[in-house]
Length: 139
Image (cartoon, rainbow, N blue to C red; front, side, top):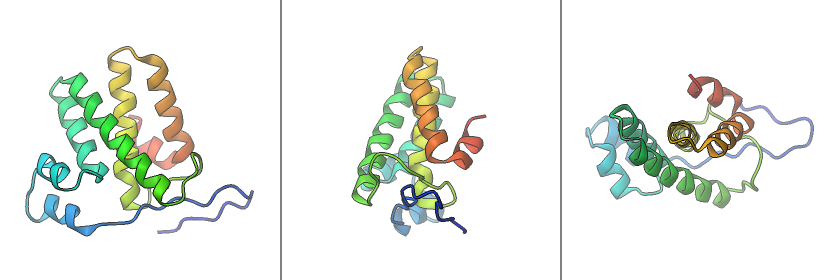
C-alpha cells in the first residue's frame, strides 16, 4: 500500500487502527454483521454491511439508520486518530473502508428518501476524503 504525502502542506492522511478480531469473526467464524456490530459497535464495516443489506431488501429507512450509526462511529474514530474535520481518509487502508462505505450508504439512502441536501453533502464528503473510495462506491 502506498499512501503519498501531500506536497501542498495539507493534513496527513488519517489511518484508522485495525482490529483483526471483527474481520476474523466475519470471515472465519461466519458471524453475522449484527453479531459483529453488537460486539464491536465502533466497527463501521459491520454497520455498512447492515446498511447495504437493508437497502438491498428495500428497507431504506433502516439502511439510513445503520449507515448513520456507522458514519458517526467512524467520525468518532477519525477524530480520536487525529482527523481535524478534513483531509484524506484513504480507501487503500482497509480500516478506513467501513467508514467510507457508511458514508456512501448514507448518501444513497438519503437520496432514496429525498433528503437531497444530505445526499449531496455525503457524496461530496466522500469524494473529498477519498477519490478512490468515491470511484469505487458511487456506482
